[in-house]
Amino acid sequence: MSENKVPYTGKEKIRFNVPPFTGREYEYVRQAVENQKICGDGEFTKTVSRWFEERTGTAKCLLTPSCTHATELAALLADIRPGDEVIMPSFTFVSTANAFVLRGGVPVFVDIRPDTMNLDETLIEAAVTEKTRAIVPVHYAGVACEMDTILEIARRHGLLVIEDAAQGVMASYRGKALGSIGDYGCYSFHETKNYSMGEGGALLIRDPAKVERAEIIREKGTDRSKYFRGQVDKYRWQDFGSSYLPSELNVAYLWAQLEVAEQINRERLDRWDQYYRLLSPLARAGRIELPTVPEGCVHNAHMFYIKTADERERAALIAHLRANDILAVYHYVPLHSAPAGKKYGRFCGEDRYTTRESERLLRLPMYYGLTAEETELVADKVKEFYGA
Image: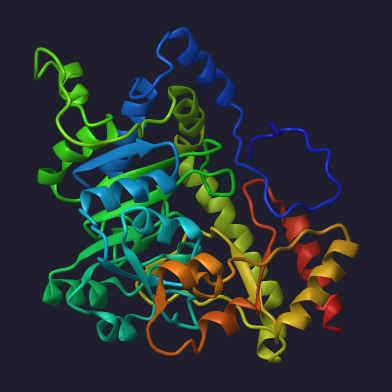
């Protein structure tokens, strides 16, 4: 691990998250400034886009200012119209639903699997109606949904598959990179992600025939990308669109991490494996539950979570860890139970696991730079809480 660290003045000795930092970010941001090309689609953007295209095998990677913007761009490309239904889990970040609600779409929430916290693929077909337009699997914690089944359902019903792979960079399903399996895939480079540019995202496009329109929508509805490639003599307004280009400064910051992506991934996996090993005795004793990674899935150690008995026990454990200068947090409030979820969407079927499992889940500190000693201390304090 690089010894370069950004100073921290907070209270907790062990933070929940520290944005990834390698030390070369300053150099690359300076290069971007010196290149006098700090708006979108400069040399760093081209380098990073190629990096993802080569690693994922997708036709095109378009960087965006956030994963929210990537998902909105996917919704535009999917031609979501008012009343169109989009199947997704309720246990996800609000952007998953917002991207389609902004187009007049209706999120149809389906229950999750308790083992992976992912969309339960066995319940999707029952949620399909004549209004269904797309399925949006969310790869929670960088662990893949059951994509073979989801793709087969989509094929039978003529639906698009838009992967919310915000947490899935460097993870895979049966040898395929998450985000590259459906029609579109969305990545996040928020400061809480494995690789970060502060705020940022990417849209992966599988079908080469979809690339030109995506470029046009991303460039405010113009064919400006073709102009810069010398394919047209002037650029014109061709379609509706918006500005979905990130600053070159942000992308330069990201490249400093992607060029050592394997090292970052390896160190995170080491800490994940250490947590799992140290906390396994508690799991075997039935005091907590640990994450599940199904066969065929390669995860990226985006997070390490445990499940407590219930919400009250989780609150007590959070307080115990905080008293020992360790910050642990829980995750999403299920969207279908939120005011906007009730207004814009609906839950299909029974909420057997979404609410119950979300109230038990607790995320432990996990980031590039977390040491083995710190990981052991966190695990020791969890075991101390349970009297182990």
